[in-house]
Length: 334
Image (cartoon, rainbow, N blue to C red):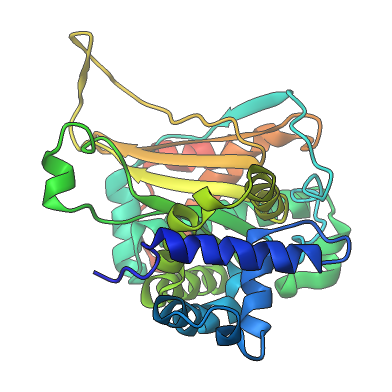
């Protein structure tokens, strides 16, 4: 077990340093990740707290903090495409949310695609969503897409889950709890070619798996977050969400039909009304279900997203020489 954030005295020391940094921020919002960024830039952080536990934390977090902008709100906003432009420093939930239900996709088709592409199911579905966003912006004659092309920044917050111990899984109190955190990932929306997009997404998800950013993020939010003032925590969450374009989640569900109140649940959907646009995908009983929840005032002609999503998978199948189920082909042209 890698546990260096467990000490309450360590967390208190971190909060004291956060307060010191925030007071010197000269008008900037107090932000947990601003604190980590500033900490990583201190010339001699051990002079503040000479205790050995904090020394370990500073040594480990120093290299992490240099890359904290990839995870947090201490970054630039995503580019102002028509899909992302509602995300800014004063964004608010309009209360006018709508949902687009994506076409149902056979899981075997998605698995055939991922096998041919030598990537994961998650990579395939993320690529399909990215392609749909790109084609939507293109259909809307988006000037930012035309100008910036492949250099566009359009990031998703991805919920990343962690394995639980046998003790947690066998305890009725903790068995239903997940261990997870949000991690930032660029979707490569600006790429004109879907194969380039797939390579981009695969490289980003591989990086997430190989580097400790997600684990460090989990430790920060669970062991440092509870000790900071509520206003700091709220501002940090807002700064993080407002700088991203969507939350994207893909959940593997039961492989067989389940019963609800004694009746078979023939299909499922995962709906989450978030501050950001939310795309939710879930596999269930051999099918992949999905939807997008968005601000109805901000995305015109949003009903085409389902068709664009299916069309992305059809295009991938064409490139990878995989047979397309008739229902998916029909959904892509409807």
